[in-house]
Image (cartoon, rainbow, N blue to C red; front, side, top):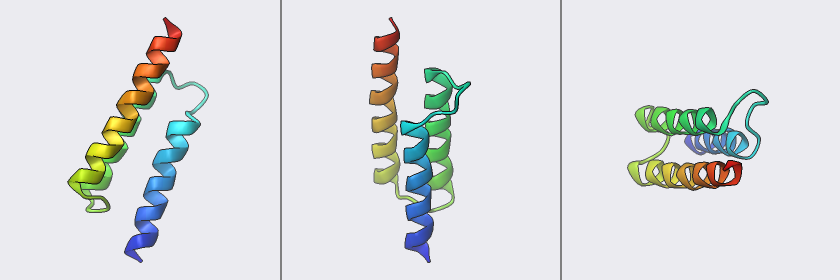
Length: 70
């Protein structure tokens, strides 16, 4: 059961990373990815190391998006 919840959480996070909502800019996407990572951690779905990894991935994606827009 726990693995299924974790898998669904990672899937939802990855979907947002790869396919942001139409009206979502890079900053909004980044903020939402961080919010999800924090939420998953607070609920005990992921551990601190996994949260850190998600934040690092989101930060790289945000930097690339901002760099590409400028």
